[in-house]
Image (cartoon, rainbow, N blue to C red):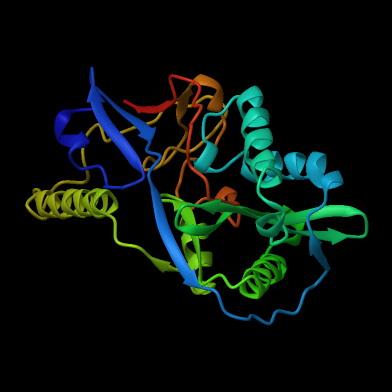
Length: 280
């Protein structure tokens, strides 16, 4: 890949792209968007049993967490061991909350199978939607909406005024769900800068393309991705090569892998280095 080709790559605030030794190297950023929603009574028709979390749910919650987030940008590059630790940490945090706030955490059950959860944590600013997931075969059926309605109604009964949440800047499915659930984004300077830089990069690319030779049949030697396992890069058509343990992951921020796995907490990342995508 030439420097000129590198500068024609699309901008994406969720990915850091560097030009190193004739290669474009993608690495995911782990910036989160913070949102908030007023706590008001919500009505939702539950397609399954929704009940408060119990001590005996812990193992099933950890297994469901790992299955829901394994292929998302939120935990991109995690080794199986790091995924297990992350699940134990985040699920365990809900059990460490005081009984009042823990009572707002709910799970969804189909028969005896745990198919989803909405876990709440107490932040300095108030209650926070910490972990929300629904198993793949139950997504887009109103399970998450029913889980959050149960959580919000419990918080309302406790006199809480607002509920906060996070989503990864590159998780577009999570962003769309939060909007549909009434969450409002809280302005953040870093998020604004990342989006502005991506927009500026796209404007620069469009300007360079507009001034290209009218007779050109396309960029000679356009970026090509060499692949292992057939995973797609964020911006290249074809295969890609992933460094580290993430080989085979889909990298597009629009990927179906992101659909409805929403991880709110975004602290203490445990990426298995190096995690990157190379286009030559």
